[in-house]
Length: 75
Image (tube, rainbow, N blue to C red):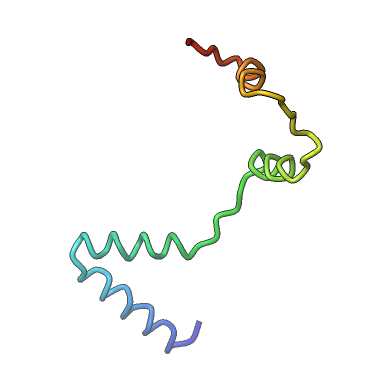
């Protein structure tokens, strides 16, 4: 890291510490949104499964679908 980069970082830290708590929280929230969030293996597997429409069941009626999901309809 160069001296210019170190000075810029120190200035950033100084400015951040001077912020009111609410503004600092907003800055941190913004920084969090910039960071990449990699999905875990379970989520990736669900994505892959959702792309394969051959695995989806089909139903003739809503009642048939509800029955398959174990949902009891009271009429």
